[in-house]
Amino acid sequence: MASFIEADTIDWLRYEQLTEPEAKIRAASAYEDELVEAVLGRDDDRGALLPWSKTHENFRARPGELTIWAGINGHGKSLLTGHCVLDWMAQGQKVMVASFEMKPRLTLKRMCRQASCGAQPSEKFARDFSRWTDGRLWLYDQQGTVDVQRIAAVLRYCHENLGIQHAVVDSLMKCVRGEKDYDGQKDMLDLLTSIARDTGMHIHLVHHIRKGDDEEGLPNKFDLKGSGSISDQADNVLIVWRNKRKQFEAQAGKEVDREQPDAMVMCEKQRNGEWEGRIALWFHEASQQYVAMPGGRPKEYVR
Image 1 (tube, rainbow, N blue to C red):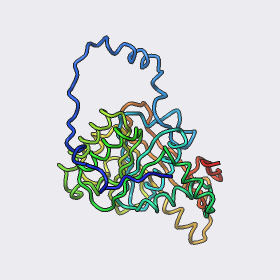
Image 2: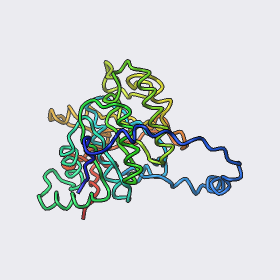
Image 3: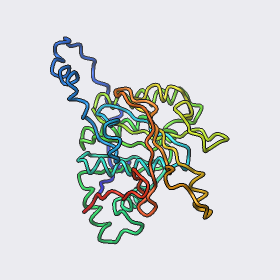
Image 4: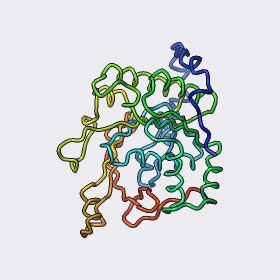
């Protein structure tokens, strides 16, 4: 079953006091093998895929990078990242989720529903799912605000002791003093990008977007709450947007265009990739998965 990293059971001070490795100066020729891999394009397939095959040629969550997952409150960014976590586990990746806004049991309940492909998983499926997460999923059990140094300690612990490859931190605003704490946000991003680079983990940071007068308009990276350094320092910026007009019209019993996407993931930045663009998605209500086409079937994870 998913393992819990509890705040009171580990000597966090040890990991908070770790200093960054000293910079190493090496001859350029020492990177010969890495250079050849890059020139031949062999390193293009490094990193985890997103759940939808139509994204596989365009985006990967590469080792040592930091991705911002941003969205307006209520647009499903945590739901979508939970779906991605399922897929990364299925790809053999080890994942740690630190949600400071949702208790672990609720995080697992939602992921279990997504994995079951239906609205009401059975007790047997819930137990099978719990066992399936063994060696794949860990959760940091703390809600509310958290100190930046504690986050750093958790991430270092996960790398050193658990071999974690993907760490999801939900959300940035639980780790700084507020939207106007620009220095705190910059320091947080500095620290996370350094840890990602030094450990090889991919860090996924959930963040909020300002809710403007027109929630139906498509946001961009300049709409992120707080400092502009957030998007500047991140390797990737992915924005989750939900088609609220279509959702409300369907709930009101109005006829809607099924071909119109229910949501989009917009790649606003990809430092080490060439593609930026939009991914249209449709919401499968029963499973709460996002699927790649209208009427698409949810993806099975636990057989």
